[in-house]
Image (tube, rainbow, N blue to C red):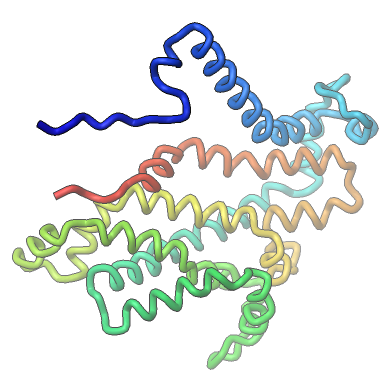
Amino acid sequence: MAQQSETRSLVSFAQLQRGRGKAIYWTLLITVLILFTLVFIGPLYWMVTGALKSSPELAQTPPTLWPADPQPENYTEAWDRLALAKLLFNTFYYAIGALVFQLVLDTAAAYALSKLRPKLGNLVLGMMLATLMIPAMVLIIPQYVTVIDLPILHISLIDSPFAIWLPAVANAFNIFLLKRFFDSIPEDLMSAATMDGAGPMRTLWSIVLPISRPILGVVSIFAVTAVWKDFLWPKLVMPSPETRTISVGIYAFSGGTPQNVVVAAAVIAAIPTIVFFLIFQRSIMSGLTAGGLKE
């Protein structure tokens, strides 16, 4: 007769059921939850309320918890003065393009490494993962040199969306995530598709991709947020005011703009990513915790 396994911790289950132990447990739990909530929500609260303050009140020390005289017109001024509609459209355009390129090319690369198993595939994967050890700042100069004079074609990609899309495709982390998920798909499904006459492309489209919706959702979120929050690279390759992203545009206008208006612009810039996360948060959890299918 198999023995029933019991999970043990620093505090036993019996102690948690007693009056004093139960009170200590809930007190510590609530305290930790409140502390972490303040740490993560505090900056967002300061940003939202700071955009409602006047410039002197925003610079006041110590800061006030709530604006003495709320000024919601700061958001309207930020929208008009910084031309946020154009900046948001540019950033959305670059993010969607990077998302499409990554979903197509990274998925194809991960599928080939996982299921097609080419020769030297593990070596190629190892070289990809080795690039994760290189600091991003080290790659800025060679990437920029490549963008201003594209090899073979000898054209400049400055102020072109491809200057953002093409470097975003070379994402070893997303390829690794996709490959690990594809590895967990049972080989019986792949063999059954082959016996039915499906080729590699048909198997990818009809079998692999429908199963991989959770991890594709995670990759999509990573791709969009990476472009949306990036600052240094768009600042280098998108110098024209007509092609700037939201982060570069806010920085460019911050010099002669009141600080409360700049904060209001930052709040508006953060709203799309927050909404995007709230809509697809289930995909994040299911994609990161999915270990594959059980046979």
